[in-house]
Length: 493
Length: 96
Image 1 (cartoon, rainbow over the protein chains, first blue to last red):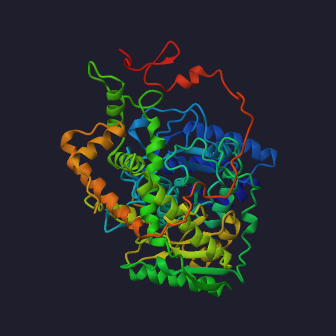
Image 2 (image 1 turned 45 degrees about the horizontal axis):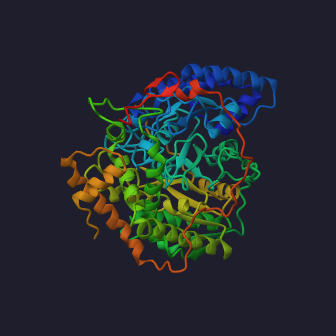
Image 3 (image 1 turned 90 degrees about the horizontal axis):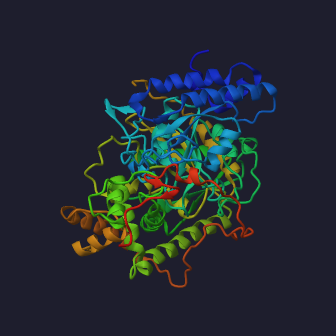
């Protein structure tokens, strides 16, 4: 059978179990799709030998019976995850040549479940960006094109999104600090869920902003997201913020029944200058959920407009602290020194050469807001506003709201290079609908919901109660089914 | 409107241990000013009596016994070092 790379995780799993296909065949189909997709720049480190070795092991395990759902499924891993013996450089020059001696907990869980890693996926440097253009490898390219122009797949998990949309893998890992799973998913017509903070272990994932970072699956369908999320999450003693809670069978919770649930529509997400087609899509999404038996309720999340400024204090502050470890001593790049240079020059030259402009900018902003005299004015004030943003959500959920429906992004994918001359703050506006969810630690999922007038995918976001990813995915699947999004990009690569 | 002057930009770059050549300082100062101006919206919020968030989920951090759980992996730890000698990380001279 051809086109095995186009299967969903659920279909591939069922076929593997029935013996209709082997993991080796699935893996070979993906490897050959990857070989033909250099123009997308999605996979930046290729591990075909390791993949085939794992695929053979998975086939043996499936034959023996009782293999987990992800066993034999070919996946891509974002470059932010440390993978043992395989280059892991967070798309940064400063980690050039770094080959971890250990495996991140999430990728280890996938590996142990039998998933087959095909290679490492492109991203924005240290996950700081919304267009993949800050990557040291050059940007990943969206398989969707407009008038012959290359578009961004979004960021930071742009390589993951591009790879799934182009059927280079069946599923991929992403991470999300301010929207880095959900915005790329929306830009490529794919599904991505950021689970509740603490669901997935952060151990072994290169840290950006530790109080906001979460890993999650990026997939072709909501069902696939449910299957893969279950394999990724669970308590890890090596991450003190990982939740010691049982992991439900998320797939079993996809009943398709959302009758009687209350869906909130937050009025503050109706931004000035929002394109009419985004507003129309949002209204259609609400209509679909109402038709499925949900009650649509207007709600207020009054501190929404302060989420972006609070995020752009807190995330750089945490980044400046986390990225202090890149000092040219223990791993990665070290600058060539001039005669007489001391250790301070080594740090300064190494970090100037190793970090790209956006990372440097954020590290310096973070340094400033944490510096003596400004800590209270910026950092502490931002943390107080964060408490208020979370309180807005707490109150909505306490009033009986089960999930909140919003647009995923303020626009469809833009062209690579289009934002080059814009000031950094313009790029940050991409996160306007997603960043609140990270600040409040909630689960959020992006679902493809339609095409805009230009023929590009648009997504809707559903935000759930903490730890209720199962109910959230169930609502997401109802939306997915009603929207009936089946468009695929025309192959040009 | 926040205004970051060149001396402040130079100081921040040094605190962050990032070498910024003098001719890049004006652009850096301007970018930092833009970002800080964007953050000033936070001053509109009444935060009296609000506790700064320390943990997004109300959970107590797990405790464990304060004991050695791992070790004997010197070669692994040094394997990615740009310069390792005789079992140590090597750096330029720190003390004269």
